[in-house]
Image (cartoon, rainbow, N blue to C red):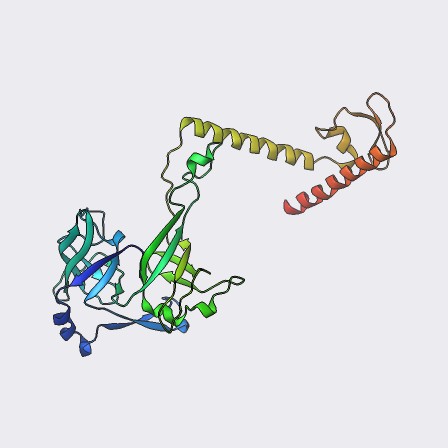
Length: 314
């Protein structure tokens, strides 16, 4: 688990709930892969102070929001109890801390969602989230204006579960090979960046992750203008015309290539009976040997392209 933009959460009744827990433990075993037990497991320990991602909290709740909000409860992943927000501590407009309590009573209302968290011993890291380069599906001639400011977001103060120490260390980082890949629950898939200098034994050094795949397709935010739509349609029409011309070209028999191909049509008057290569220009002028040789290469190129086209469209 990880929190890219962490918010501190103080669990006010933690000690009380800990005594109620089985064996007085707040440690839970988690599979490294929810679908493959052979990949092993690791443990996570709930502490009196945890951190959640800012995307999982809102000051103003709504019927379509399933995260935490004032006077609202959500489930705590792996613990199973409800986390209820009692108080929001702010410094100006910035949220500094949430004071919450755990409700693990038998008659508690079942939460509609469970949020992920990291404990107080979470490891600081930098997380680079890469998204779509453009704000539209098909960039127009004004592509510089369509570059998304969110194509690279750097979370310099992210936190990740300390279990990453088991698989991430600077001695394993190699710029010539793929590095360790991990899934941060509910966030996406990430790979260790070569800027990582993290020492798992001393727990020091920079730890850097790059997102490779998001867990859901991101929605393009920008609406196309009429001018952009017209330019896009023009490009599509041009591409469609080029594809149609290519298809017609691939249908031309090599013997008729210089008679029917658009760029050669009408240029020549006589052709070699065996190869179809032109021997005379339209005005009757005989072609030089070098010109005929050049045209023969052009015909050979057409034959090869036609063979590939036919093989691909069987």
